[in-house]
Image (cartoon, rainbow, N blue to C red):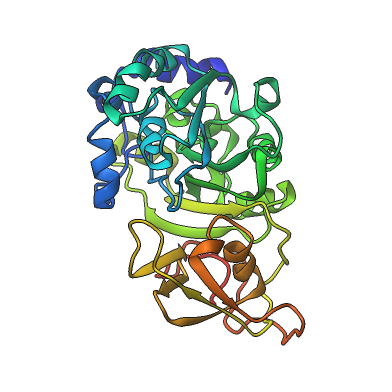
Length: 346
């Protein structure tokens, strides 16, 4: 499989989301009302050329610089541009000329509709495995997002390494993608339809977590996941018995420990993040209610204390005393627990 095959599939074979042969690259309808509201303001032509498997709208984006890897026609870029506001910026990168032509054609239209003095978005054509060839500075991005694109990359490790390099200290990569419960056989990986449909390029989940840690992202956090129903009998039979999952992860550029260690720390959420007045979900295991003292491991402490979330929390404790492993902490697991998190059970 190569870039040309993927570019052809998304630039010429697919003319709209209705041309997809499976639901692997389709977002479910269960999205927050505020996300639906910003999407309702995006141009119809951009919406019809959307392909994505999850939601990539993390909270607390006001004023942030956001980079969207594999932005396509720009649906998520224009949605996020409303959330970062006029003082923020959203940069989209995609390799497909046809998709970017649509994205660029509607920049002024969106700026006028969103009430910005000028467009707060920019688009670059390039490969997400070669971000070093684009005018992007190291340590310059607050949040990197990507929606069902990592599986299409030829060199997934390179994508993660570049993402780590571009993020500011304390920044995060928040993205959705397709994962497999085992490694994909080579003959399936070379099938252009299965690859273009986001199936045969999917990473085995354990390989992904190992790859993320090597890139520098310690303690990957699984935010949510759902089993993938292919809904195409022919393609389903070709990939059987492999099972696929659509999952959202968040990876922080922080110095984190390999496991969740107990330092007797806790946090109190102030309820001040827009669209989350009553509680805040860091990941599938950390549902933090407003005003309640919430014990956390050292890694979770840093994910809140050393990031853009710090102003929204009060912090109790320090790293002065170590009490051993945090109770309930486990290693890498498959997508099996109801909470949807693969690492810390804090």
